[in-house]
Length: 204
Image 1 (cartoon, helix red, strand yellow):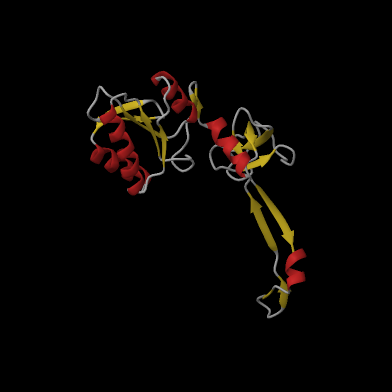
Image 2 (spheres, one colour):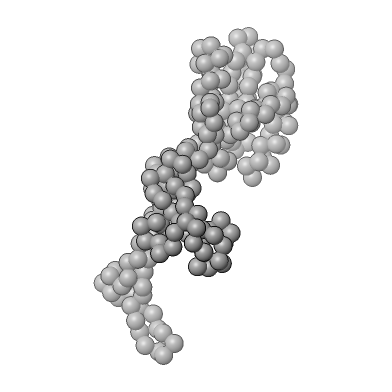
C-alpha cells in the first residue's frame, strides 16, 4: 500500500515503526496504540500497488515439492507469491510524483534517461543535435529526441508534461547545452562532457 490522497483504500498505520494494516481487517483504529511499538496510529488513504497471495500446499502437493523438517519427516512446501500490476504501479507513481506542469518521473521509473529538445533553426545546430543524440545513445543513455517542427513553447510544455528526469536543450543562442532537471526545473549550462559526467553519476 502506498500513501496517496487519490487512493481508494484506507490503511491504519504507524509512522514510527512502519506497522500497517488495511482498515478492512485491522483490529486497531486511528488514535489507538500501535501493537508493535506503542506509538499512536493514524489513518491514511492508500493505493494498492501490489498483492501477496498465500498458496498453501495446493501447487506443491501436485508437483511433489517437499522438504524435510527438523524431525526428519517430509512435508509439502508451503508456497506464496506476490504480484505488482505495472499499470497500477505507473498510476501510483504519477499520482505521487507530479506538479502543476505534469508528471515528474523518478530515476528508477523514467521511460527514458534524457529528453533531448532541439530548439535550433540553424542547419549547423540541427546537425549538432542529431549528432548529440547518437553520441548519447553510444554512451548508453536512452534518449527521447524531440526534433518536431513546432514552436519552442509547445516542445517545452510537452517535455514538462511527459516528465522525464532530465531535459537537454540545444538552441541557436547557446554554444553550451542547457540541462534542466525536471524536478524543480533547475537549469545549468554545460559542455557535452559535463552533461555525460553528471548523468552517469545520477544513473549509475
